Length: 200
Length: 246
Image 1 (cartoon, chains in turn purple, orange):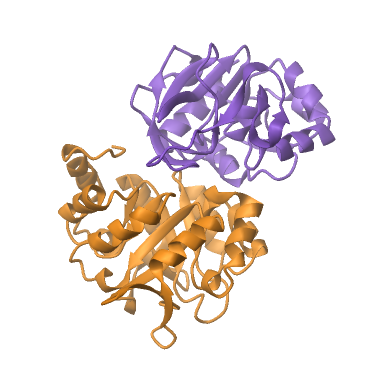
Image 2 (tube, rainbow over the protein chains, first blue to last red):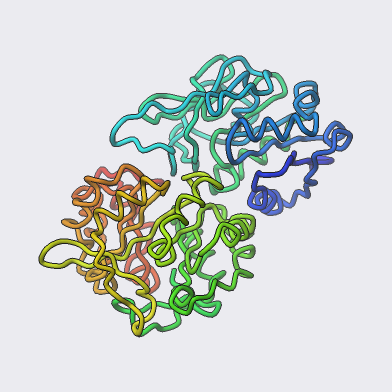
């Protein structure tokens, strides 16, 4: 079954070409929009994000999407910075975020032999079952690029280790998140996107 | 993959290039074989003072479900923006950054360090390692008299998120990576370090991971020729206790 209407939230700044291409490979059309009506009417909403948390929040506030997004009832997937924005705050630029999931993103502590940003393939550890993780297994590799991370919490459904464990995938009510880039995580990423789009 | 005029080419010691195949066809092949990342270098771009023909980047982005990096004649934030908007994860700068090191700062401030790779072509001399410039063109290729160690340190300070070190004397001759040089660079490199130049056998990959603690190893000719199959390489690295995505 094809999702009715997938909307990728854009407020400028974020690079969404590769995400759209990933959806096209799943034969799913998507609309890129910052329009509240379109986003509210979507069957599935994806919140991508590349860049700094404070800038991204400023752009969401500018289009008043900071008010809209927490009220959405359909499945919402935050990717990378988009996942971090679902939380209360980020240390990056001391940003207040959307406040949907309790907690705040913090910078990886400096440690030699662990360069920041955490960039590259790393393994997932499944913490609890979720529709988002169907068909994925412990030890599956995903592609990460980030300097800030969320400590594992009640929302965490999969974690990854980078000197310290952090949340790789989260679920909180109808809000889902992936810290890695599913659009660049080969078959594992494609499966996660497919799982998300199958959620009703 | 070295790209010239829309095709993938390969030379020995950066010279005498021959056509290996089409960009999309090779991108798909390496994706299917399990490559973790692909790098596309337009080797003709920088010496001729022009940018790359970028129409293929979007097609590559549609095809690939793994990250890829584009290099070649990137001289401005605007050029980099166009490439990243086409779907590349990273851009890599080399010769233009040697001329204008501020370019690294500008790219890193605009896109974040994670997008900015600095490629370094380095030659080994009696008294140390020196950076080479315009290596894509035999007529213009030159020694910069810059110390490779100093340049790697400066590039990081300016915001490089990754260093690809191409050891010139090893490149294309398949006698193994320059472990001694890579180990020296690793000492001063706090961002991901990618070894390039010299891969000729599976054991060379194991040696560079174990001997120089690099984060990744890059190769082209042994994969183009089929001498090393990526699935076999990764399986054997895994058996040697090296962490790889299988």
